[in-house]
Image (cartoon, rainbow, N blue to C red; front, side):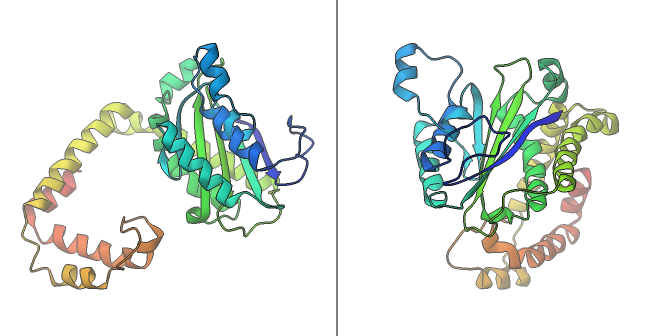
Length: 282
């Protein structure tokens, strides 16, 4: 695995000298690049002319086998339309910055060996890698709009990753060589973990996560069968939760409540022998 390209583009400015893009970077450049990276590999000529858009968003989508983003999977034309609106919302004025990385594997054989053949496969790697990557760029994960496309149209399967800030805090795009090395190391570590999994557990990644999902679902089923109405701490948490915004565990809205949630989970599991047993299996 290697990063074959790492660059940044600033709205209203010419790209860095190592970039092949010669025009000034604009909103159309970035949103168009998104469209390019997300295009399917095979389309008839009429469809190609109808759907083609120039620019950066368009470029990364060309020959893509799937697009993942900070808004979830972009599986439909409507999904991509909504995401382009988000790009236009945050990348529109002089000085806005967009970063771009290309992560490349040696061959299709390496992609198969690592289990990195689809966008879902890459999602499991990038969910771990992205927070580490953004940290090196001094970016707050919840303040980043990102997308990546998986390409299988060359002898080197690769991923285009692009990201911008929602509310700009950085006004210089360049990062140090040491931090870029840390970015590479983070990605490599997350990918290498898939290889080590087989050595540690005796399962390949497909078998392991299939088994893990099965055990987790059994734990959830047991929890659903419990009467939790008398768990005072749970009732107290329910009364304290925000009335608006996302309530998912990892959402920014829930950040201050996560320690309390963790304590309640421990209380429920460790005070119930059957839950504790299933938890230990998982």
